[in-house]
Image 1 (cartoon, one colour):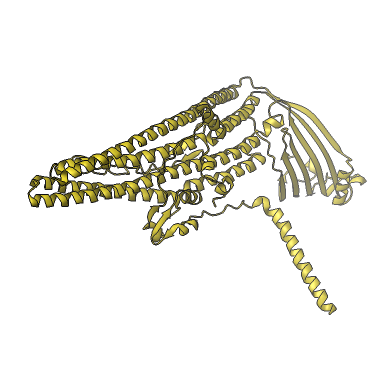
Image 2: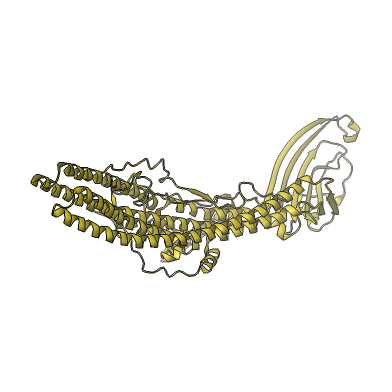
Length: 620
């Protein structure tokens, strides 16, 4: 039993030792290992399978927004700016220059739009039965994404300023052996015609920079040499030294503010990356709302076209019966038949627009679909309808502008960019100053060896092994001290002057760009308000028009039943009614899109659609 207990104890001790060794090894190897970056995940989120049923994607607006946040590649691309910014902070803390990252944001595709889409070159269900002809959506740019660059600095970087100390410490080491034969021009100096030497070097060094600009270097040098010289008292002998050199800038490159400026900028870039991701989420959610609204509008407009076609076919049947009875002329049947084919063409176009819009929506809410045939071939069935609120209940314009200036991430990140440019300018101005460095050196030397036997007598204090040399270093028997100033005074300083002027000009430009963004935000708020008022007025007028056209059509149909009217007038009133119904759909869609534009302009669209930022950043 004791043997078993001892064996188990030894096994546990060995396992713990291995774990400890692994941990130590991992700590030692950490500076030389890359930080892991997870691979790209191009699979769609499980939510897509939840809304896919019987070959159709039954999609509500909230599901569309959630799917876009989880799957949209523009959002996923922007998420990589977060670890990129983290790497910038890591690089700056090591004393490296910043590499920057992309400020580009992608807008959702325009889509084919509602019933007033530019893809229809003539009005739907026109009075004259000529049909409508769709054009190429790619040529109209409705399928392409628009790129927006939110950098207020432009493409020209700010100057680097004075060099940043390398904050990451470094150890250097050298081991070298050399055999050398040197013919002597003056043999009297060495006592031999050919000097033979064997030299072994074993040196180590340490260097590190610090925030005030201080540079520290330490060196521990060792040389062991064997000579055949008769004038040398030692052979072999060992010479060792340990020295420390400290260089402190007093003017250019002095101070924490100057030397840690890139760390401050990198930390601000981390804030910018977060704000850019939020802005991308806003753009994507707004794009989804707009595309989904157009999808529902197209879906409802297709129903209008189907009902209009059914009415036209009924008119054709009634006209045919009256022609056969002799109460209508043959030409009326021809007109009714032409109207049927014209509306069929409109229905074909409307269904085609709906399918194109479904394809655009799929591209926004999925990561890929070419390997998922059920998603690729599925039709989208919107489960929400276009509902107009009874009242707007909007705060005053000045309150909306105050919300926009406070909430919008694009304005916040632009302000942080201006702050970064001002931080960088501190370095540019510091580079104008002359270089004045305080340099201090402290060194200790040691020497030990064996009496050569052929040279003069050696000092007994130096006779011994390598330990004797280390003892001399430890007791500081042979110290050397040095302190001094190094001055570099440029007689002309044109490069630094040009950099400062250029950076100050760019700061002025960033301030102008920031004001441009604020003006653009104000314009977007005002434009959305105007669009909402116009859409509501158009909706109310369209409702009245639809009611009146319905009344006129019913009156004309009553006259037609008794032979007091012709199919021409019926066709005309049916066309007017179809246009009025489509206009109602257009007005509702325009209002909802204008409201979404206002939510985006004010910066509340994520809260208005219950988007949790933390979950959206994680992508689930």
